Length: 432
Image (cartoon, rainbow, N blue to C red; front, side):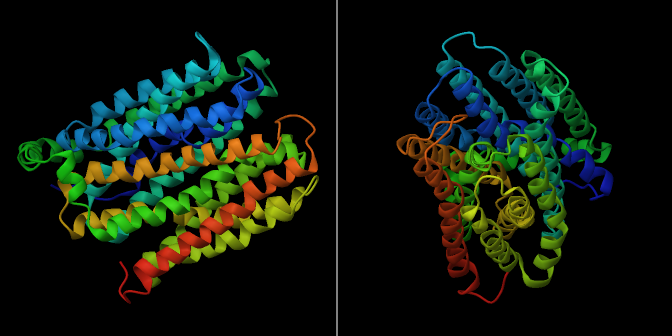
């Protein structure tokens, strides 16, 4: 089943804007929430890492099931967006503004609801993108629009607390944070529901076809239908995302406790994500000319070149770190747009449209699992090295922070690049 709707700038804007409020439950959840619960509620870094990992273990079961549900109800995408948006706003408001029970349990509950809602929204958007068009380049445009809005959302979500704290009392910062999220989510849901009359008409016309094609599908069949190339894509994507997730978990500690530039955290993140957004058109052009796999490989090498310098920085190295953010941020655009586009190509090539939700659920799970794995690896290692946030740390503890933040991720990125070359480039001259 395919939607009979043209790909226009307006439709891309209406579709992609939904990713902006969604971003509040991705990177910021793993950066802001652990810092808040460690500094304000006294929860240890090791326990926070374990709690985040436990959430992802549950995700190992619920994400594919959620993908199966989306596949079974492909004519009900609007309902999923409304439900996911409401749960996301309520859970993040509760996470940052109140603790009704013990802090670790409350953190676990609210975080779980937030990532569940994020999963439902992300899987729904991914499934709709796949059903929108078969054209590989259009799929890259759709993914680019979605991820560009996601990057804008990340910038807002991460920098908003710092901006609000300059004009509001500290106890009101996250109340306004939740209010901004709710407004953005309302706009995103409205845009998605009014995407175009043509889409709603296409959904109505093909609803019976949807039921016929998905009535015999199952979660097991959806996982079994994954071609080998998609499994290899997931593996490369997982290693690459782990390399990106470890710095994401540690960035606040690195900027505040090593560079001594806490006030510039929002600016650094803005440089990074803005560079990623600006780099998306470049990677799209490279992928059209040289193939998506080669473009993705080139972005990994650029990421290593740009980020390895962070290992050698110390207190006060503000301008060198800004350059690290710009160069490594340019590489981010390819990591965000090309893997979903490659997965969509696989779905169309093997006629797996009825399992698109399950396949995107696997991609969503890898994204979140990498963040959780990064937390459970990086935070306990810092604990073991004697690192304490917002205090004066020993040179050994700060050295462990540098190794974890910069050196290990660069090694992992090179490993991902090696597997990408071996799986997709060396074995065939033809790329998609």
